[in-house]
Length: 258
Image (cartoon, rainbow, N blue to C red; front, side, top):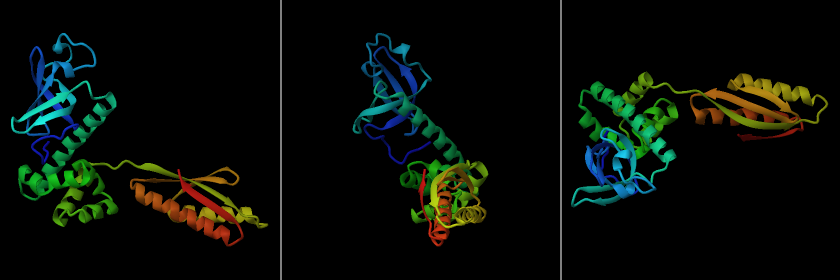
C-alpha cells in the first residue's frame, strides 16, 4: 500500500515490520511509505524500565507505532511504541487491512483500464486517499447513488468512478443495518385510534417500514437498508406523512431518529 507523501507526519500512527533489533534500538520498515526505515529507541518501547528490547520486539513482527520525530535531510524517522494505546493500535490495524483490500480493488480498476498499478495510484488512488481519507471508503461509497455522486463532486473523473463502482459491486458486500426512529402520535377524535392505525399502515406499505407499538402514544419505526442516508430519509418522510394525516383530524405528533 502506498501513500502520496514520502514521509509520515509527526504524531501520525504508522504500520511497520521490525527489520532488525539492536541492544538499544530497533529498525522498522514502514510499509505505507515505500518501505522507508524508521527507528525506535529502547526508551520508547514500553512505559517501564526495559533491560532487554528483544522481550518486546522481534524481527518480522508487525507493529503500530507513532511518529515522534522526523529529519527529512537525514532521511530519519523516529517512532514510539509506548505512546500508542491498544484502541488506537487496533483501529490503525483495521484501517491498514481495509487499505490492503482497497489496493487489490484498485489493481482490478487498473487492469480494466489497461494501465499498471503505479499509474492507477498517480491518476486516481492518491486522489481517493486525499478526498476520502481511505481508498476503501471511496470504493464503499461508490455502491450507492449518493456515494457515487459524491465521488463525482469530489473531482473523480467519471471514467474512473464507473469502473470503481463496478469493481466495488463485485468485490464488496454492503451490510444491511437497521435505522430506527421514535414516533409519538395522539388523535382525540372519536375514531382517533382508527385514524392512527390507518396512517401507520399506509406509511408502512409505502416506505417498506416496520412500525411497532410500544405504549400510548409511542411507536418505533425501523427500516433495514444498505444506504443509511436513504433509510433515514425514508423514516423522516414516513413520519411526516403519518403526522400530517393525524393533524388533519385534530391530532398531533412528533418524531426523532434514535
